[in-house]
Length: 402
Image (cartoon, rainbow, N blue to C red; front, side, top):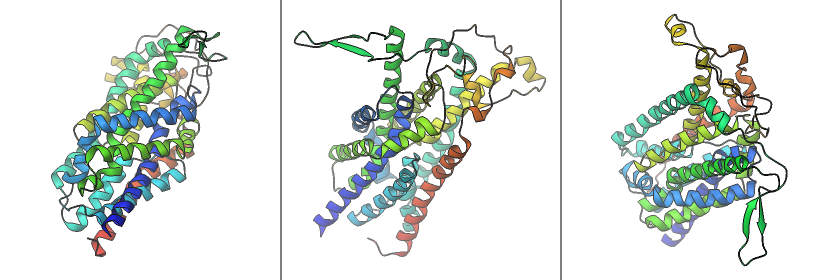
């Protein structure tokens, strides 16, 4: 019976990791895939490697928090299976409709449901986690807002990268070791820009592994069924399986359907969100990359919009036209590379001083976001963790599971 429960627990953990891979890969590599910088197959391979690295290097702290610190209830094999089942089903529902959900919030919700039902929830740790959930999006907003207001125009000029026809690299195979060189039409600027975009996706994959591998295996580590690092290897492998299969749909959603986010903006958002998530993971706090990244996008747009307002305007009470669509105003929007697949080289332009840019140049938010898809994403990001929490509470409160 014990062996059967262990095998079932491992299968459910793989199921959870599989769905985490499907959700997180779209968030990490959707921009690179949507801008035709990377194929879906290459994105899946990179996601597998870097998520596993993040889990091994930073992930143990989060595993410890979820597996033993958040609830005083001992994770028996059966309890672990039920908790993982709720996490997996909630994430599977989000992946079926092609929307990346917050895996960390879902996992914490399911485990918190267990703690509430048994009266063993570590209220102090839960308060700390929730506090960081509230503070981290605000930090992301303001950091991105400062970048948008003061640095974004220069970044647009630096990353004005076109995508040429043909291969990015050619390989001379005349010797024993193939020697790479730039492709026939590839410029040095294009090569560096491509490396940066892919590198940011890998960094996002690392931060996703640091935070999310624990969501798949923490209960198994908590009940002693698996040691820390074998469990992380199991979770990382399961994430890779999801990256190669169901992640294709979420990559389409993030890369093509949700937004025509400029490539420069995607790089800024990825860097800010990944850094915050990795920092919180090192503290043992499971963080919601999806929500942090969303607030980073809003902050970046707000920072761009406020460039049209001088300090004297602000003192006199004049409000800026705060549109997230302002992200595209420093280059020709029709030609600037975007996550949605548009590509080209924006023409360099003189950057206007803060307070002197034309408000007429700022497009509306509808130019950046697809309202219907965005509403669906926001709804599911909030409802999925709630489903996991409520289901876990009801089951552990009224059924004799030990």
